[in-house]
Amino acid sequence: STASEEDFLERLMHISHHIPKIEAGTYQCPTAPSANDPRGSEFDAANGGSLHKWFRIVEEQNGLDPKKVWETIKTVVSLFILSVRGAVSCKKNPVHHACGAVGFHFFADLVVDASGRAWLMEIHPTLAIKSHGLGDPEGGWVEVLTRSTRQGAFGSLAMFWAGWMNAPYRRWAETLVRRRLLNQPRWKAEVWRLQTLRRWQRQMRPGLGGEEDSVAGLLAKTLLEEHMSCRLAVEPLLPSMWRRIGRYVNRRPDAGSEGDPFGEGLRSLYRLYDAARRLVAKRSAPGDLRPTRCTSIDFNEGMVWDQPWER
Image 1 (cartoon, helix red, strand yellow):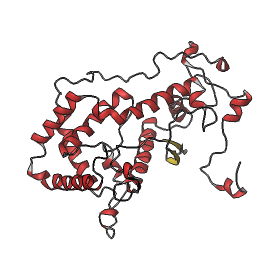
Image 2: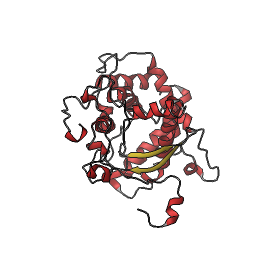
Image 3: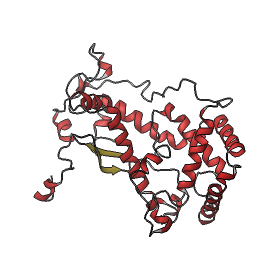
Image 4: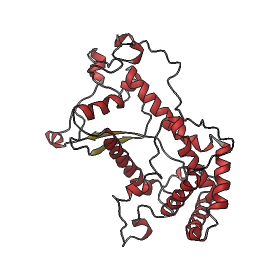
């Protein structure tokens, strides 16, 4: 439904919803892994499917490179995250307990056009898995979509605690960064900016926020989050993509630090992160709890799939 005829002029607009199809029994489910079909899962047409199936369509039916499309999607989501930084920062956010928060969880609706450009339509600051009637229900109704949505939602949620998942690696990275990086004269100005910012943040919101006080601890936590991301089947966006994102955003010279997308300490943090990343790249942490061959945790393990409406 729409409010007016003019709404149909909007090119990026939801014009269908699967709830009526599900309730009417006309939703066509993709072949699920539990069906044990010799042709594999998702070989057939359906009303929905996983990201893997979508990438096959991208390549086979549209002639696009899935890797390039995926990089474009990551870039668009990264730009969104960077754009909301001002609204959630300690200086502007009126909600005291949100200042210094480690992040927020959301899922997004995107459209990719025929040329491979990604467009962000809307953001939902809620879990991607919901009960029937609370938004898009396929992620709790159809096996293929539930598997993918459950894996992604649980993995991204677990990233809130990734910085505390591997104490041996974190202690090793913090010591290495403190001794081999932060004492170098070339990084003195960057370290001073971050230390000053952290003191101000603690004075403004004492006891709130889960981040480290020291610059070495903050960098170690960031390195550990990236180190553990493969176990949670997620892909880091920022800080790892910050230089790529920098191609699309520019400073506003007349707006001071607020006109810099990476201002207020973020550029200093990201530059130090790049250097710290190079420092740990070819080293191994003693007692590292992450397997050498990093395989993702299966958040669907042990699930029993027996939905009669899919048979």
